[in-house]
Length: 101
Image 1: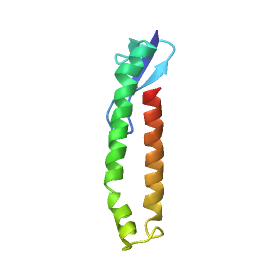
Image 2: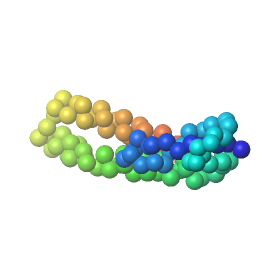
Image 3: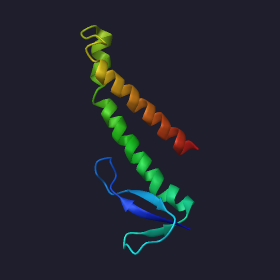
Image 4: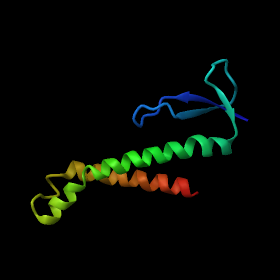
């Protein structure tokens, strides 16, 4: 068995992530679950929530690609946002791989 202690998640401040512990503590928020239960009940919903948030971030900057395609802006003007979009897409790809494994 594994013991997990609830921690605050960085995505929107929701308390949904857990850390794995080797022994049980006296804390009332410790729960005992198997690795499979952890993945199904905690990890998957957390990853899905993170992916949804990241896709919303991408959607909020879709206008940049349109402006560049139409010629009303340059890649240099939006270099930081383009790099951030690349990082977001890379993280989404990582999450999809983890969910499909």
